[in-house]
Length: 268
Image 1 (tube, helix red, strand yellow):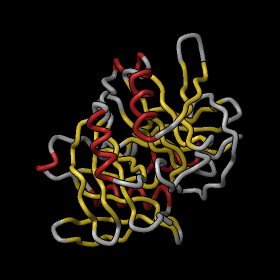
Image 2: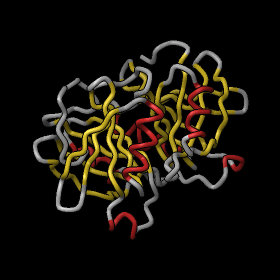
Image 3: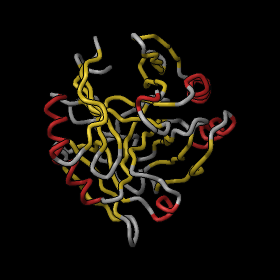
């Protein structure tokens, strides 16, 4: 979240994804791509002598953010990526729980001015996510509407290991079902969906475990075409998920992956 202001404070139940943030190799190019693709506006917030945190906005509300990869991230080979944040009551406690469950802590809990407290965690298979303990901000000021994030999906090499990890750390329920050849796990946070999980298959290519961010759109096919025109690569062409909607997976011009989906009905 970095040192950033948020003008609204929605409430996010602990265990709910509450924020998405892009680390990119070219901040200005990424701003240009996403503002054209999703109709976002932005506000650049200097947070040090050589770093700017760009707040992305939809209808004047914070929808996400982006920043240029820091030197230490580049040195460690971190590629451009979207990071998903999970709301927690206590970042220190959640981080310790994750550590005990086999996670690697990439950044121990730290305060982001008065905005909140966070940590960055790599799960036992290698997928990275962040925890967010709300201070002045609980997360995005808008979500689950077209051109905002609406779903977070774990692509992993070991679904059994990750099912055990996330149910242990966040208390999520996990319902695994087969959709044809696809085994899909729906995580739940109480009576609400929390996220999804599926195994990375050989035909998907050499993809590292990751949490994929989905953005809702009004027209999946038109958005895929627009993204391609703006320089994105189509990883998974638009396809239907019966009863759910039409989706596609893309990588932006800098290489960060994300998905878009036209939902048949609004996400809960």
